[in-house]
Amino acid sequence: MSSNLKTLFWLFVLLLIFFAMGCQRSKAGITVAGSTSVEPFAELLAEEYMHRHPNSHIYVQGGGSSAGIEAIRSGAAHIGMSSRSLIGKEKTLHTITIAKDAIAIIVHPKNPVHDLPFVKVREVFSGQIRNWNELGGPDQPIVLVTREEGSGTREAFQKLVMGEEDIALEALVQDSNGAIRQVVAGDPSAIGYISLGLVNEKVKALQISGTTPSIKNIESGQYHLVRPFLFVFLLEPAGEAKTFLDFVMSPEAQKLLAQEGLVTALSKSTEK
Amino acid sequence: MDTKEKIIGKSFLIIALSSISALALIAIFIFAEGLPLIWKIGPKAFLFGERWIPSKGEFGILPMIIGSFWVTLGALLLGIPLGMACAIFLSELAPPVVGTVLRPAIQLLAAIPSVIYGFWGLVVLVPLVRNYLGGPGLSILSGSIILGFMILPTIISISEDSLRALPSSFKAGGLALGATHWQTIWRVLIPAARSGIVASIILGMGRAMGETMAMIMILGNAVKMPSSFLDSARTLTTNIGIEMGYASGDHRQALFATGVILFFIIMILNSSAIILSRRRMG
Image (cartoon, rainbow over all chains, first blue to last red; front, side, top):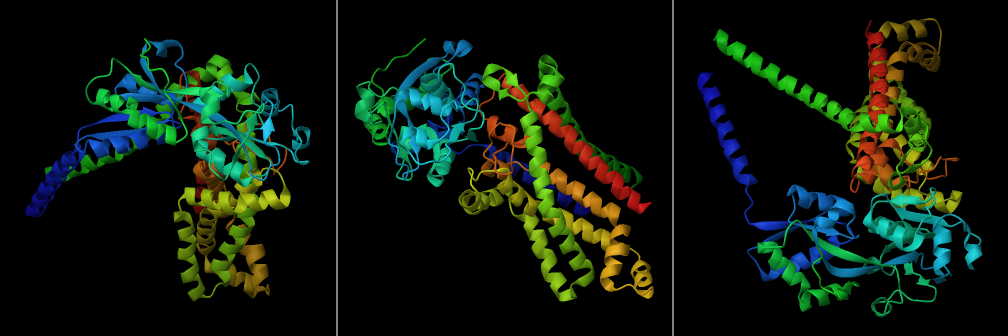
């Protein structure tokens, strides 16, 4: 009985030791956290970076722009990703624009409408235009799909398109770019907005006032629905974070981002 | 030896208490985070406000309370008849072999992760509703059907247990009086097991109220008063689930406040289930 208990005790201690060992990370690394819009691109860059530096590890996490900024404040992450400009107190942080992203208005590929005047986009999303026949489409009620409150993409859309107007309350709410794409791809009368880089053949990006959302039109400034993708730092970037940042800003990495449909950083500036 | 027993006893007590204190800590935390906001904007404005626009400081959760109840009601409309029929069949009519196959299958229904239900609903059910009934398809109807299936294991297993727990003299008495098997089930057994059956339904309601992942995927999450079963809706749980990622400040507190309301609803449901099932014993 007593010897049994003893073995049990030592087994328990052994388990604790194993557990403690498991907690140690085998590789040193940095954590990048924040916007789910930036996340897929950061993952791509991290993969390429780790390929070149086999001894380092970049952990990429989502959570949202605000969560990412919170994470660098609390020290949980080294680099924050944000898909919106910083506001209020956040402005004291260091930001670097790694690329710019356009927001595309997407519909089902079978939808005959392929161009919307800018003002009409606002009228559609505020619920003033409720039927596709008012836009030259079939007699079908418009199904609005939007992002949830607090999302960087929604904030950018609100600022760039809606201005003071509210997005209609009856709009369906999805919590990621992918979920919006999924809903729009399945519903011929749906309209939504996602990152241009994530538009695929299952949905159709609309022209806005006759301008196609293309890299060329974004660079020339003709397509207006553009927002920055930021890396946010608590202090001046240093160490591994700095190395990763330098890689991200290097021509090869920027080319990689451009291939994925982003507009690469034209101006590289550290804002205070 | 005696001291050893005492030490073992005490340490088990401490372990048991720690799991209870985890529950207490969660409750305290939710209330501490959520209540200040409810006081700040007023309980009435919070509970009965119809507009939820956190970016403008409007926090009214009435559409979500209504949404939660609509979806739960729909789930019960489907789950109660199906679940009851299944429980009666298993306890009274099924040949033993069928029972031994069916029972584990129903338990398996409870073991399927809710995200799988949600995914199946999104891919199979939502297009059906959209094509044949209209609307966006992401609707209360789709959500109710999925939830109806999700609460089946709860309703079936507890109802069946309460039917089986009846003394066999009830059934023998019914049959001896000349009633048919079905008359005995309908007029004697079900009324006798009523409290257990009601408890199973209330627990099913609690399950339906608390379901989050599948509902985020199927309901469409629009924050508007639903006016038909084909409308999109948002429940209290999905409100927290869908917005927590980006929320900060008042918005984050409002989500905890939503949790406070949910806490009360679930507490009421579960305690009434406990009270009802106790009455059966007494």
